[in-house]
Length: 159
Image (cartoon, rainbow, N blue to C red; front, side):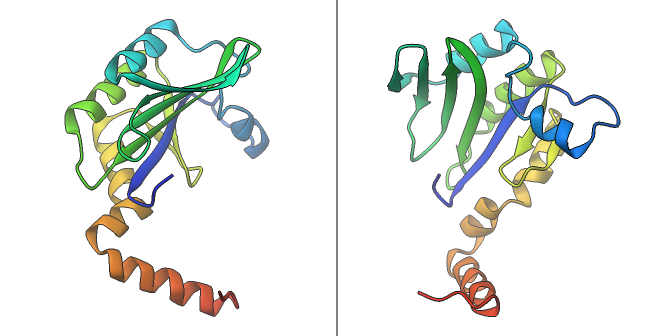
């Protein structure tokens, strides 16, 4: 993941009152199948560029890994994870809108790389995106790097 990419995943909607353990377990599609309409729509948004793995355990990468991409992870021939990375240096609003609409249509939600769950609703997605580390980096790369360095020095990390 590049620092300028906002990473998030469509996941099944957690049950109301789910415990943290239940919530963590729902971050993928291991317990229920990915709706075919969601999978089909996401695969249609970007061209297939790469395939990793062999047999029934593979990852398909749609789009360019340093820009916008969608990863579809298979285990034992079943989709277990969908991962989306958006290049915030050059935001593709139409792509994001299509992802949000496809996810909302199957009543799924999103989880950020910081493990925050948010609705597949335009304002919620934009709010999460704007609060992301990727957005902070794109807005002010040097300021972001200074904050990271300051944080690391406060926590005793050094290179």
